[in-house]
Image 1 (cartoon, one colour):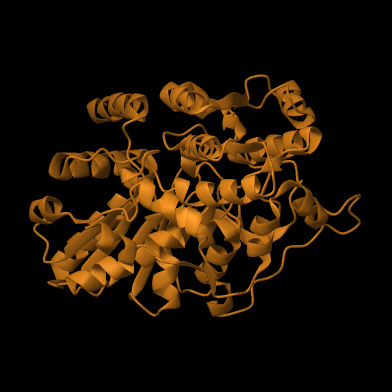
Image 2: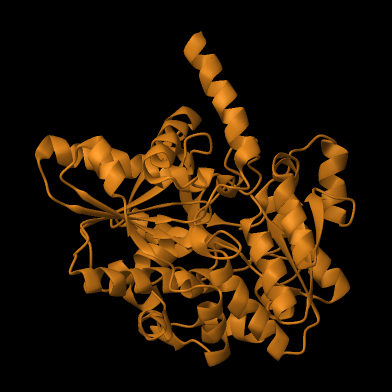
Length: 428
């Protein structure tokens, strides 16, 4: 079993940049900018993380120490067949899911937190800082920093901080310092709070606060999504899934994942796209934050304060304030540049679902498979159910594979409030 795990876990990360149908528009500074955001990256990111962000190498070797940590946290994660869901739907389709909730931090986020912390430690860094939306990334950062003997500071989006107190607790148990963003610890946070003392926060604001805090305290910033280096590290998900499907003798037809910034979807699907595996790729977002249906493909800042370089992506604008929805990990104004390009080229399709739709899907999955999915991942499950029912109508024996990016055992207060709202709506 151990030997099999070592064989399935890749030795290299996969980078889709050289395999994109068009060159990726490069990051750039705003015209007439008072300082270079690109130079700022050299200050806040660990050197090797920045090198990997800018590289066009197709494969990058995973350091042996990082690979050992991957094995220690339970990689490769299981690829499971959702037989009970198939039976419930009466579909001829086979449904498989890659279960990233099996990691100690309960989501895919640790796949990039570990290497980023490793590269920071290799530089002699003693303290890292980051932001977190729903809490999964902050949890992964807190654990990874502690594993490599560093301190961590996490700016957690205020609405998630209040909705998910157990995420804050687990970050603190791992050794992280956690603050609800916007805060009074940064000038940008103070500005936001002055304009709106009850601001719910957003991932873009928390990113800006983390970057400002890193600059003011001479710390390194670890990035949780959107940038290509994150998707690079997350490619272990897709590469493992390919190896596991090959062992089963299965060829995937449809690949599905949810999208906040795009790292879990990209990490899962890009190795398939780059290797010509699969026929249909579906990125799923929240209808309450309709970036796919209403966003524009243009240069924009990844963060709210405009401290990071402009990147070309599908975006609702970096000043957009997302509503405080049930899935904090999807409350982001844009999508990763590489994913945005693939969507604009028509290679990746999209869906958007609302709270009622994803609650129904999550409940169906819980009652058939016994796993409580993260609300974010439930968006992918909704698309899987629709695809499986379409296969039933067409009598197609296709193979549907999705990334279950995290469990929802720390999201139970969110599910409780969703259940009350859905029940109330049904009684009207």
